[in-house]
Amino acid sequence: MEITASAPGKVILFGEHAVVLGKPAIAVAVDRRVRVTIRKGKEQGIFDVEIPSLDVQGSIYPEEGTIEKYGHGEAGILYYIKGALQKTGIKGGLELEVSLDIPVGAGLGSSAAITVATLAAAARYNKQDLTREQIAETSHQVELEVQGAASPMDTAISTYGGVIYLSKGEVTHLQTARNLPLVVGYTPQPGNTGELVAGVAKRRNTYPNIINPILDSIENLTNEAREAIIKVEEKRLGELMNINQGLLDALGVNTWELSRLVYTARQAGALGSKLTGAGGGGSMIAYCPGRTREVLKELENLENAFPVGISSKGVTLELDKEGN
Ligand code: PMV
Image (cartoon, rainbow, N blue to C red; front, side, top):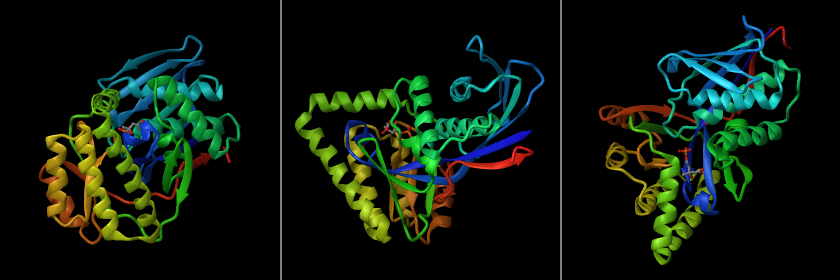
């Protein structure tokens, strides 16, 4: 038997950082996915993991709860895989192959997508039927255990797909009549989410009368953006992204490299552009109806860039050889 599950990566359109402090955020599942295949392995009691694109091979020993890594890539992702496998109670003696078409460490939700896809594939292999709610909830638990802190946004969007509005842990699906033509630009230096979140908290403690109104403004613009997405008001959506970028800059999470990409995108015709995720490096997004090619070309001159659209498909069982 061989089972493959896939799950999409994500970008945060509005409200990052403010969401940690109780404000809403909007995230979009993108049409770039990770795939996890599970099949019978060679060694009993062990999970052998192969992630060729990251040059990571590893063995997970479920009884001891240990991980051994080979290859030059970082071991980090193996902890999410181990966590997801443990949640299903599946027995070792299996091989897992992971492929990604999203970059890792760029704030595009690769670890959540891998967790969600591993959980879905392992559960099916183990003949367990999990609802989407259970997959989202359990994957979030895994992220919490591995990272210490995590909002439920990444695992929710990777599980459900589409566009979600997250407010105080509650997920609402937003319907939009049209695709969102986005271009992602990513800087080689990943931002450290924990440090950046702590930096915003510190700034808020030092300047509460200045930072609290900024967080309120982000809340207001996220709520306006929710309407603009549903009604497909392109100009308004772009403007709100630009305002959000200015406010993120004021929170101290912007960088010169991100700014350069943000302004280059606007000059090339994007209606809006902003950093996405934690900042301090990582990625930015540009909203470019009718201008995707031009924006992509200009961003590619500076850094890595690629176009994305919305993926309405959340976690999916793709291949199920003899597994039904
Ligand atoms: O870097 P990402 O995509 O994991 O985004 C972090 C988003 C924050 O709002 C800064 C943190 C969070 O947990 O929501």
